[in-house]
Amino acid sequence: MITFEGVTKRYPDGTVALDDVSLECPTGRITVFVGTSGGGKTTALRTINRMVDPTAGRVLIDGRDVRDRKPAELRRGIGYVIQHAGLFPHKTVEDNIATVPRLLGRKKKETRDRAHELMRLVGLEPAMAKRYPFQLSGGQQQRVGVARALAADPPIMLMDEPFSAVDPVVRTELQDEFLRLQDELHKTIVFVTHDIDEAIKLGDRIAVFRTGGELVQVDSPQDLLARPADDFVAGFIGHDRGIRRLSFVPAAEAPLSERGILPADAPVERARDAADGWTLVVDVGGRPLGWAAAGALPAEGVLADARLAPIGHTFSIEGDSIRAALDAAILSPSGRAVAVDGDGRVVGVADQADLSAAITRSGTRPEPAPARPEPARPEPARPAGEDGASV
Image (cartoon, rainbow, N blue to C red):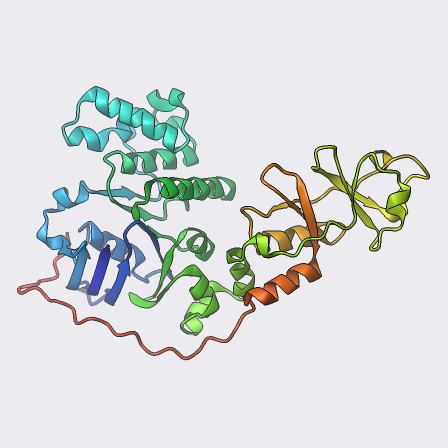
Protein backbone atom coordinates (compact mmCIF):
# COMPACT_ATOMS: atom_id res chain seq x y z
CA MET A 1 0.00 0.00 0.00
CA ILE A 2 1.28 3.45 -0.95
CA THR A 3 -0.22 6.22 1.15
CA PHE A 4 -0.08 9.99 0.67
CA GLU A 5 -0.78 11.93 3.85
CA GLY A 6 -1.27 15.66 3.32
CA VAL A 7 1.55 15.84 0.77
CA THR A 8 2.47 19.34 -0.36
CA LYS A 9 5.29 20.40 -2.65
CA ARG A 10 6.07 24.09 -2.83
CA TYR A 11 9.12 25.40 -4.70
CA PRO A 12 11.21 28.41 -3.60
CA ASP A 13 9.60 30.66 -6.22
CA GLY A 14 6.19 29.99 -4.65
CA THR A 15 4.96 27.48 -7.26
CA VAL A 16 2.74 24.83 -5.69
CA ALA A 17 3.13 21.49 -7.44
CA LEU A 18 1.11 19.47 -4.89
CA ASP A 19 -1.45 20.92 -2.53
CA ASP A 20 -2.25 18.81 0.56
CA VAL A 21 -2.74 15.55 -1.35
CA SER A 22 -4.07 12.53 0.56
CA LEU A 23 -4.87 9.21 -1.11
CA GLU A 24 -4.08 5.49 -1.06
CA CYS A 25 -2.74 3.32 -3.88
CA PRO A 26 -3.81 -0.25 -3.01
CA THR A 27 -1.39 -3.16 -3.06
CA GLY A 28 -1.51 -5.25 -6.23
CA ARG A 29 -3.65 -2.70 -8.09
CA ILE A 30 -3.16 -0.04 -10.76
CA THR A 31 -3.72 3.53 -9.61
CA VAL A 32 -3.71 6.06 -12.46
CA PHE A 33 -2.87 9.74 -11.97
CA VAL A 34 -4.57 11.86 -14.63
CA GLY A 35 -5.32 15.53 -15.05
CA THR A 36 -4.34 18.84 -16.60
CA SER A 37 -0.82 20.04 -17.28
CA GLY A 38 0.64 21.46 -14.10
CA GLY A 39 -1.65 19.27 -12.00
CA GLY A 40 1.24 17.60 -10.18
CA LYS A 41 0.81 14.06 -11.54
CA THR A 42 4.49 13.43 -12.22
CA THR A 43 5.56 15.28 -9.08
CA ALA A 44 3.31 13.03 -7.01
CA LEU A 45 4.73 9.96 -8.72
CA ARG A 46 8.30 11.05 -8.00
CA THR A 47 7.68 11.57 -4.31
CA ILE A 48 7.21 7.80 -4.06
CA ASN A 49 10.81 7.01 -5.07
CA ARG A 50 12.23 10.21 -3.55
CA MET A 51 13.17 11.86 -6.82
CA VAL A 52 11.17 14.68 -5.21
CA ASP A 53 10.82 15.20 -1.47
CA PRO A 54 7.62 16.91 -0.27
CA THR A 55 7.65 20.23 1.54
CA ALA A 56 5.06 18.91 3.97
CA GLY A 57 3.25 15.66 4.63
CA ARG A 58 4.41 12.09 4.16
CA VAL A 59 4.51 9.32 1.57
CA LEU A 60 4.35 5.86 3.12
CA ILE A 61 5.01 2.42 1.65
CA ASP A 62 3.36 -0.26 3.78
CA GLY A 63 3.21 2.19 6.66
CA ARG A 64 6.86 3.29 6.51
CA ASP A 65 7.86 6.83 5.53
CA VAL A 66 9.94 6.72 2.35
CA ARG A 67 12.30 9.32 3.88
CA ASP A 68 13.35 6.77 6.49
CA ARG A 69 15.21 4.96 3.73
CA LYS A 70 18.15 6.03 1.60
CA PRO A 71 17.08 6.91 -1.97
CA ALA A 72 19.33 4.29 -3.61
CA GLU A 73 18.05 1.54 -1.31
CA LEU A 74 14.44 2.61 -1.81
CA ARG A 75 14.70 2.72 -5.60
CA ARG A 76 16.09 -0.81 -5.86
CA GLY A 77 12.65 -2.06 -4.84
CA ILE A 78 10.75 0.18 -7.27
CA GLY A 79 10.61 -0.27 -11.05
CA TYR A 80 10.50 2.96 -13.05
CA VAL A 81 9.34 3.34 -16.66
CA ILE A 82 9.34 6.71 -18.44
CA GLN A 83 7.96 8.04 -21.70
CA HIS A 84 10.92 7.36 -24.01
CA ALA A 85 12.09 4.17 -22.24
CA GLY A 86 15.36 5.85 -21.13
CA LEU A 87 17.52 2.98 -22.39
CA PHE A 88 21.31 3.10 -22.35
CA PRO A 89 22.19 3.63 -26.04
CA HIS A 90 25.57 1.88 -25.75
CA LYS A 91 24.11 -1.30 -24.24
CA THR A 92 22.31 -4.17 -25.95
CA VAL A 93 18.73 -5.09 -25.12
CA GLU A 94 19.99 -7.94 -22.96
CA ASP A 95 22.37 -5.69 -21.03
CA ASN A 96 19.79 -2.92 -20.60
CA ILE A 97 17.36 -5.36 -18.98
CA ALA A 98 20.10 -6.86 -16.79
CA THR A 99 21.27 -3.49 -15.42
CA VAL A 100 19.61 -3.60 -12.00
CA PRO A 101 20.23 -7.30 -11.25
CA ARG A 102 23.93 -6.77 -11.99
CA LEU A 103 24.01 -3.75 -9.69
CA LEU A 104 22.59 -6.07 -7.03
CA GLY A 105 25.57 -8.38 -7.51
CA ARG A 106 23.90 -11.24 -9.34
CA LYS A 107 25.96 -13.51 -11.56
CA LYS A 108 26.23 -12.84 -15.28
CA LYS A 109 24.54 -16.09 -16.39
CA GLU A 110 21.69 -15.53 -13.92
CA THR A 111 21.10 -11.99 -15.17
CA ARG A 112 21.29 -13.07 -18.83
CA ASP A 113 18.74 -15.84 -18.24
CA ARG A 114 16.51 -13.39 -16.40
CA ALA A 115 16.76 -10.91 -19.29
CA HIS A 116 15.72 -13.56 -21.81
CA GLU A 117 12.84 -14.66 -19.58
CA LEU A 118 11.57 -11.09 -19.37
CA MET A 119 11.93 -10.57 -23.11
CA ARG A 120 9.55 -13.47 -23.65
CA LEU A 121 7.22 -12.09 -20.99
CA VAL A 122 6.89 -8.69 -22.68
CA GLY A 123 6.65 -10.12 -26.20
CA LEU A 124 10.15 -9.55 -27.59
CA GLU A 125 11.81 -12.10 -29.87
CA PRO A 126 14.98 -13.78 -28.48
CA ALA A 127 16.90 -12.61 -31.58
CA MET A 128 16.59 -9.01 -30.34
CA ALA A 129 18.77 -9.67 -27.29
CA LYS A 130 21.95 -8.44 -29.02
CA ARG A 131 20.39 -5.42 -30.70
CA TYR A 132 20.93 -1.84 -29.57
CA PRO A 133 18.11 0.64 -28.84
CA PHE A 134 18.55 2.50 -32.14
CA GLN A 135 17.78 -0.76 -33.96
CA LEU A 136 14.35 -1.06 -32.29
CA SER A 137 10.99 0.54 -32.99
CA GLY A 138 9.44 2.85 -30.41
CA GLY A 139 7.09 0.11 -29.23
CA GLN A 140 9.93 -2.37 -28.88
CA GLN A 141 11.95 0.15 -26.88
CA GLN A 142 9.03 0.61 -24.48
CA ARG A 143 8.80 -3.16 -24.02
CA VAL A 144 12.50 -3.22 -23.14
CA GLY A 145 11.87 -0.42 -20.65
CA VAL A 146 9.09 -2.42 -18.99
CA ALA A 147 11.27 -5.54 -18.92
CA ARG A 148 14.12 -3.59 -17.31
CA ALA A 149 11.77 -2.24 -14.65
CA LEU A 150 10.67 -5.81 -13.87
CA ALA A 151 14.18 -7.28 -13.85
CA ALA A 152 14.69 -7.21 -10.08
CA ASP A 153 11.05 -8.28 -9.50
CA PRO A 154 10.11 -5.09 -7.61
CA PRO A 155 6.79 -5.05 -5.74
CA ILE A 156 6.12 -1.48 -6.93
CA MET A 157 6.25 -0.01 -10.43
CA LEU A 158 6.05 3.68 -11.32
CA MET A 159 5.14 4.45 -14.93
CA ASP A 160 5.26 8.02 -16.24
CA GLU A 161 3.36 8.27 -19.55
CA PRO A 162 5.13 5.14 -20.82
CA PHE A 163 3.02 4.67 -23.97
CA SER A 164 2.42 8.26 -25.08
CA ALA A 165 5.32 8.45 -27.57
CA VAL A 166 4.09 5.66 -29.86
CA ASP A 167 1.39 5.54 -32.51
CA PRO A 168 -2.21 4.61 -31.56
CA VAL A 169 -2.04 1.02 -32.86
CA VAL A 170 1.16 0.23 -30.97
CA ARG A 171 -0.19 2.04 -27.93
CA THR A 172 -3.24 -0.23 -27.84
CA GLU A 173 -1.00 -3.30 -28.16
CA LEU A 174 1.19 -2.10 -25.30
CA GLN A 175 -1.82 -1.38 -23.10
CA ASP A 176 -3.21 -4.86 -23.71
CA GLU A 177 0.18 -6.44 -23.01
CA PHE A 178 0.49 -4.38 -19.86
CA LEU A 179 -2.88 -5.60 -18.57
CA ARG A 180 -1.91 -9.19 -19.38
CA LEU A 181 1.31 -8.80 -17.40
CA GLN A 182 -0.52 -7.28 -14.45
CA ASP A 183 -2.99 -10.17 -14.38
CA GLU A 184 -0.01 -12.46 -14.01
CA LEU A 185 2.29 -10.43 -11.75
CA HIS A 186 -0.06 -8.38 -9.51
CA LYS A 187 2.32 -5.46 -8.97
CA THR A 188 1.42 -2.27 -7.11
CA ILE A 189 1.47 0.22 -9.98
CA VAL A 190 1.17 4.00 -10.12
CA PHE A 191 0.64 5.11 -13.72
CA VAL A 192 0.69 8.70 -14.98
CA THR A 193 -1.15 9.67 -18.17
CA HIS A 194 -2.88 12.70 -19.67
CA ASP A 195 -5.27 10.44 -21.62
CA ILE A 196 -8.58 9.76 -19.84
CA ASP A 197 -9.36 6.80 -22.13
CA GLU A 198 -6.06 5.17 -21.18
CA ALA A 199 -6.80 5.86 -17.51
CA ILE A 200 -10.24 4.24 -17.77
CA LYS A 201 -8.88 1.20 -19.60
CA LEU A 202 -5.94 0.54 -17.29
CA GLY A 203 -6.86 1.86 -13.86
CA ASP A 204 -8.41 0.06 -10.92
CA ARG A 205 -8.54 3.52 -9.33
CA ILE A 206 -8.18 6.93 -10.96
CA ALA A 207 -6.93 10.06 -9.21
CA VAL A 208 -7.82 13.31 -11.02
CA PHE A 209 -5.55 16.32 -10.47
CA ARG A 210 -6.27 19.96 -11.28
CA THR A 211 -3.68 22.63 -12.14
CA GLY A 212 -2.05 23.78 -8.93
CA GLY A 213 -1.56 20.27 -7.57
CA GLU A 214 -5.09 19.82 -6.22
CA LEU A 215 -6.45 16.29 -6.00
CA VAL A 216 -10.09 16.61 -7.06
CA GLN A 217 -11.41 13.04 -7.05
CA VAL A 218 -10.23 9.46 -6.46
CA ASP A 219 -12.58 6.71 -7.61
CA SER A 220 -12.96 3.55 -9.63
CA PRO A 221 -13.36 4.17 -13.37
CA GLN A 222 -17.03 3.18 -13.15
CA ASP A 223 -17.79 5.61 -10.32
CA LEU A 224 -15.74 8.38 -11.88
CA LEU A 225 -17.80 8.13 -15.06
CA ALA A 226 -21.09 7.80 -13.19
CA ARG A 227 -20.55 10.49 -10.58
CA PRO A 228 -17.88 13.09 -11.40
CA ALA A 229 -17.15 15.19 -8.30
CA ASP A 230 -17.61 18.56 -10.01
CA ASP A 231 -17.82 20.36 -13.35
CA PHE A 232 -14.05 20.22 -13.79
CA VAL A 233 -13.98 16.40 -13.61
CA ALA A 234 -17.07 16.10 -15.83
CA GLY A 235 -15.47 18.39 -18.40
CA PHE A 236 -12.16 16.57 -18.26
CA ILE A 237 -13.85 13.21 -18.85
CA GLY A 238 -15.86 14.61 -21.76
CA HIS A 239 -19.49 14.65 -22.84
CA ASP A 240 -19.47 11.02 -24.02
CA ARG A 241 -18.94 9.55 -20.55
CA GLY A 242 -22.26 7.71 -20.86
CA ILE A 243 -20.87 5.79 -23.84
CA ARG A 244 -17.60 5.12 -22.01
CA ARG A 245 -19.53 3.60 -19.11
CA LEU A 246 -20.82 0.90 -21.45
CA SER A 247 -17.29 -0.54 -21.44
CA PHE A 248 -18.03 -1.87 -17.94
CA VAL A 249 -21.26 -3.69 -18.89
CA PRO A 250 -20.52 -7.28 -20.04
CA ALA A 251 -21.70 -8.18 -23.52
CA ALA A 252 -23.18 -11.33 -21.98
CA GLU A 253 -26.05 -9.11 -20.76
CA ALA A 254 -27.16 -8.45 -24.35
CA PRO A 255 -30.41 -10.26 -25.29
CA LEU A 256 -29.70 -12.48 -28.29
CA SER A 257 -31.94 -13.94 -30.96
CA GLU A 258 -31.32 -16.87 -33.32
CA ARG A 259 -33.97 -15.61 -35.72
CA GLY A 260 -32.75 -14.99 -39.26
CA ILE A 261 -29.59 -17.15 -39.05
CA LEU A 262 -29.28 -19.74 -41.84
CA PRO A 263 -26.54 -22.07 -43.12
CA ALA A 264 -24.88 -21.36 -46.46
CA ASP A 265 -26.43 -24.47 -48.02
CA ALA A 266 -30.01 -23.34 -47.23
CA PRO A 267 -32.24 -22.58 -50.27
CA VAL A 268 -32.53 -18.88 -51.05
CA GLU A 269 -36.32 -19.14 -50.68
CA ARG A 270 -35.88 -19.46 -46.92
CA ALA A 271 -34.35 -16.00 -46.80
CA ARG A 272 -36.90 -14.19 -48.98
CA ASP A 273 -39.38 -13.75 -46.18
CA ALA A 274 -36.89 -12.44 -43.59
CA ALA A 275 -38.86 -10.09 -41.36
CA ASP A 276 -36.38 -7.25 -41.57
CA GLY A 277 -34.97 -8.10 -44.98
CA TRP A 278 -31.66 -9.52 -43.75
CA THR A 279 -30.39 -13.06 -43.15
CA LEU A 280 -27.12 -13.92 -41.43
CA VAL A 281 -25.38 -16.67 -43.41
CA VAL A 282 -23.04 -19.04 -41.53
CA ASP A 283 -20.70 -21.80 -42.70
CA VAL A 284 -20.85 -25.46 -41.74
CA GLY A 285 -18.96 -24.71 -38.54
CA GLY A 286 -21.39 -21.97 -37.49
CA ARG A 287 -19.03 -19.09 -38.25
CA PRO A 288 -20.45 -15.95 -39.93
CA LEU A 289 -19.96 -15.46 -43.66
CA GLY A 290 -22.00 -12.30 -44.25
CA TRP A 291 -25.44 -10.74 -44.51
CA ALA A 292 -27.85 -11.65 -47.32
CA ALA A 293 -30.31 -8.91 -48.27
CA ALA A 294 -33.76 -10.23 -49.28
CA GLY A 295 -33.93 -7.86 -52.23
CA ALA A 296 -30.59 -8.98 -53.67
CA LEU A 297 -30.98 -12.78 -53.66
CA PRO A 298 -30.54 -14.85 -56.84
CA ALA A 299 -33.65 -16.33 -58.40
CA GLU A 300 -32.77 -19.82 -57.21
CA GLY A 301 -30.01 -21.84 -55.63
CA VAL A 302 -28.56 -21.71 -52.11
CA LEU A 303 -27.43 -18.81 -49.94
CA ALA A 304 -23.79 -19.58 -50.73
CA ASP A 305 -24.56 -18.31 -54.27
CA ALA A 306 -25.77 -14.92 -53.01
CA ARG A 307 -23.63 -11.82 -52.91
CA LEU A 308 -23.17 -11.27 -49.19
CA ALA A 309 -22.65 -7.95 -47.44
CA PRO A 310 -19.75 -7.95 -44.94
CA ILE A 311 -20.46 -8.48 -41.26
CA GLY A 312 -18.60 -5.34 -40.15
CA HIS A 313 -17.27 -6.89 -36.97
CA THR A 314 -18.54 -9.37 -34.42
CA PHE A 315 -18.50 -9.14 -30.63
CA SER A 316 -17.58 -11.84 -28.13
CA ILE A 317 -20.04 -12.71 -25.38
CA GLU A 318 -17.09 -14.00 -23.33
CA GLY A 319 -14.86 -10.95 -23.18
CA ASP A 320 -16.40 -7.91 -24.85
CA SER A 321 -18.63 -5.18 -23.47
CA ILE A 322 -22.01 -3.77 -24.46
CA ARG A 323 -20.06 -0.87 -25.96
CA ALA A 324 -18.39 -3.28 -28.42
CA ALA A 325 -21.78 -4.83 -29.20
CA LEU A 326 -23.38 -1.43 -29.85
CA ASP A 327 -20.48 -0.45 -32.11
CA ALA A 328 -20.93 -3.70 -34.07
CA ALA A 329 -24.65 -3.02 -34.52
CA ILE A 330 -24.07 0.55 -35.72
CA LEU A 331 -21.50 -0.57 -38.29
CA SER A 332 -23.50 -3.57 -39.50
CA PRO A 333 -25.47 -3.11 -42.76
CA SER A 334 -28.39 -4.92 -41.13
CA GLY A 335 -28.32 -2.80 -37.96
CA ARG A 336 -27.74 -5.99 -35.93
CA ALA A 337 -24.64 -7.10 -34.08
CA VAL A 338 -23.35 -10.66 -34.42
CA ALA A 339 -22.39 -12.37 -31.15
CA VAL A 340 -19.79 -15.15 -31.23
CA ASP A 341 -18.26 -17.51 -28.70
CA GLY A 342 -14.56 -18.01 -28.00
CA ASP A 343 -14.20 -20.16 -31.12
CA GLY A 344 -15.85 -17.62 -33.41
CA ARG A 345 -19.14 -19.51 -33.77
CA VAL A 346 -22.35 -17.46 -33.95
CA VAL A 347 -24.47 -17.67 -30.80
CA GLY A 348 -27.05 -15.06 -31.79
CA VAL A 349 -27.70 -11.53 -33.01
CA ALA A 350 -28.82 -8.37 -31.25
CA ASP A 351 -30.35 -5.28 -32.81
CA GLN A 352 -29.96 -1.74 -31.50
CA ALA A 353 -33.32 -1.92 -29.69
CA ASP A 354 -32.18 -5.08 -27.86
CA LEU A 355 -28.95 -3.40 -26.84
CA SER A 356 -30.73 -0.24 -25.74
CA ALA A 357 -32.92 -2.34 -23.45
CA ALA A 358 -29.85 -4.03 -21.98
CA ILE A 359 -28.23 -0.64 -21.42
CA THR A 360 -31.32 0.63 -19.61
CA ARG A 361 -31.45 -2.45 -17.37
CA SER A 362 -27.78 -2.05 -16.51
CA GLY A 363 -28.36 1.46 -15.14
CA THR A 364 -25.61 3.04 -17.23
CA ARG A 365 -27.58 6.02 -18.48
CA PRO A 366 -25.89 9.28 -17.48
CA GLU A 367 -27.16 10.76 -14.25
CA PRO A 368 -26.55 14.13 -12.63
CA ALA A 369 -23.68 14.23 -10.18
CA PRO A 370 -24.96 14.59 -6.63
CA ALA A 371 -23.53 17.16 -4.29
CA ARG A 372 -20.65 15.47 -2.51
CA PRO A 373 -19.22 16.48 0.85
CA GLU A 374 -15.54 17.32 1.00
CA PRO A 375 -13.73 14.09 1.99
CA ALA A 376 -12.13 14.12 5.41
CA ARG A 377 -8.35 14.24 5.27
CA PRO A 378 -6.05 12.91 7.94
CA GLU A 379 -3.95 15.45 9.77
CA PRO A 380 -0.52 15.13 8.13
CA ALA A 381 2.42 14.16 10.27
CA ARG A 382 5.08 16.81 9.77
CA PRO A 383 8.62 15.75 10.59
CA ALA A 384 10.58 18.14 12.74
CA GLY A 385 13.02 20.29 10.86
CA GLU A 386 11.41 19.65 7.45
CA ASP A 387 13.01 22.13 5.09
CA GLY A 388 11.34 21.07 1.87
CA ALA A 389 14.60 20.64 -0.05
CA SER A 390 14.15 18.50 -3.16
CA VAL A 391 16.46 15.72 -4.29
